[in-house]
Amino acid sequence: MDGNTRVPDSDDAPPPKAGLFDNPVFTDPSARALSQVGVIDVGSNSVRLVVFDGAARSPAYFFNEKVLCGLGKGLVATGRLNPEGRVRALATIKRFALLARGMAMTNLTMVATAAMREAEDGPEFQALIEKETGLRMRVIDGAEEARLSAQGVLTGWPEAQGLVCDIGGSSMELAVVGGRHVDQTVTSPLGPFRLQQVAGGKKGLRQHISTILKSLRDQVGSHHDALYLVGGSWRAIARLDMERRGYPLKVLHEYTMTPKSVRKTIDWIAEQDLASLRAGTGISAERMSLVPLAAQVLRQLIHTFSPRFICVSSYGIREGILYEQMPDALRARDPLIEACHFMEHASARLPGFGKKLYHFLLPLYRTRPEARLRLIRAACLLHDVNWRAHPDYRADACFDTSTRANLGGLDHEGRVYLGIALMYRYKTSGMRPRIKEIAGLLPAKDLAEAKMLGRALRFGSMFSMEGPENAGELRYFPKKHMLELVLERDMQDLFTEVAAQRFHALAQQVDAEAKVRVRRSYSSKGETVPSAPSDGAGAG
Image (cartoon, rainbow, N blue to C red):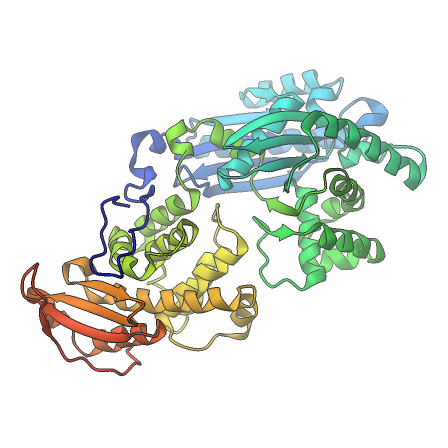
């Protein structure tokens, strides 16, 4: 955003602060070099290939496939990789190698974690994989695994501050994050496959987990307000928390829970039939079998570190490897804004219009905090990406784009705020029942503001095709309850019936009197132009 942006004659409020907005990062050569990055993650439970593509700062999943191979099953008892898991993992990695070759990938990293580094036959299996596929495997230690997982959290949460906890099949890693850096890292044997071998029944298991967690607390400290959960078992528990609560937005990334809610869900899981839970949530049988043990770890994790809130991250070690390759300038970008820039560039009718729309509407929002301006920027960039949808369903498609899209740096309230704003850009009233239920996640004040933003998008997006700033200027006087549109003399013919209706609808939404005048010259006050006060203009 231009740091010199000025809103004249608007109750003398200072202009918003500048931000990283005007130049999308994916147009930079250093970002394009990361436009296709592949990662094969050989874990103790799953083997996955992810290929990132698109906006380098905000992961877009060009390809994503996972097989639950269970390499670490029985490792504690035998000291060796699971024989069936070896067969499945080798077949899976050979497939992934061929897929990567078919995609002409030049940036492919294969990493292996706890099972491969601890099994006595790990080196032999590593050599076999490398011989059969021609790919190099990096077997990383626990500290490196913790660091990369924490970097994955920073990919989606640049300002994350707290404790990252990544649970796999055979281990659990902790890392302290803050100030966009990863600090202390530590690994532990608290993966469910290992816990299956602990003797002493429930009491012995509780004591075992408690002893290890106390040791971890001594290493990473006990004062962490936020706990960021990474790993499939944690995501399964979060999905079950949604099920218990009847939570309407089934997006796991940045889903936030309280310690009280998590404890209730853990107790609830213990009372349920796991097969019924699988049927209701879509969680695989292999993953569900590990949930009870992971739940016991999470209960004591919360007791040991006493976080105020628990956040779920869909980003982990694979995104951390992408983050590893980013230069500092790229890491500093906002993942949400970059993703929205890319979506506009790929799907909007007039790429670049979103920035113009944002600057045109700024007078309405000059007193808003930066966090809210960020969402308004995102809405302006996304306002036209669903134009190809059928007009009868375009508003719903807009809502679904923001609430269901793979967007980092966006909590659930932010998703709903964007969804409502974009829906009202096309639709002036009413919500379908499913949308109304999700909209209930927003406080009433934020819901009203999102509708207001939708009205603003509705007017600004159709006022001028080359950019609304070339046709006129918005001026907002909240103390006087006045919204003024100053038209450029050579563009005043743009302001006819439909534009007038939408401008008056916007003024009504902000509880202001609508005033329209033509600019005679840059310094003159202009002349008044009559305009219709009605609403109901057709969809743009």
